[in-house]
Image 1: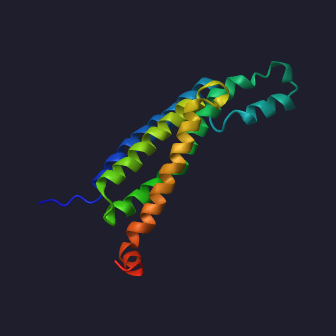
Image 2: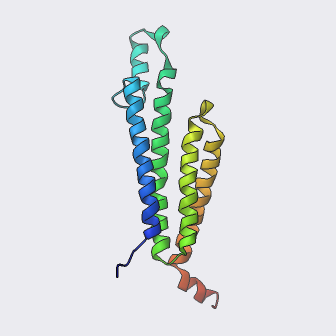
Amino acid sequence: MTIKLAAVTGTYMGILGGYYLYLTLNVVKERQKANIAIGDGTSAIIQQLIDGKNETIDHSRYQPLVIAIRAHGNFNEYIPLIGVLSLINELHGAPSGLIHLVLGSFTLARIAHVHGLKEKHSIGLGRKVGAVSTFLTLGLASVGSFYFSNKESIHSLIGR
């Protein structure tokens, strides 16, 4: 008999890892389209200004690259923390339904956030819904981690 540790967290981290790969490849694609090897195009604009070619500068050419970089970076800023918190919750006996709720909501929130960034001025509804949902799931995972890691102590303090 095989014991599966953190099967729910492992499943979602696999899905999120795949989505992270997609976002990474999107940055590569946008860098190729903008002909930028590193960064977001800012250096190229500055060089054009220094060279006195400011009448031909088209900063909008770099906007898809900037959005792709931020979508990738923002995703990367939350994934490790939510993964660790979920792993702690799962290993300390949180119900699998709670882990599914947190990681399922988080996964949908991150996808919505990326799609909201692609809308006009990067302020689409998906970005707002994704950000708020991310904050809520992060809060729930944090409270759960504290609770499930200290469940016996908490119950002894309140007399259960």
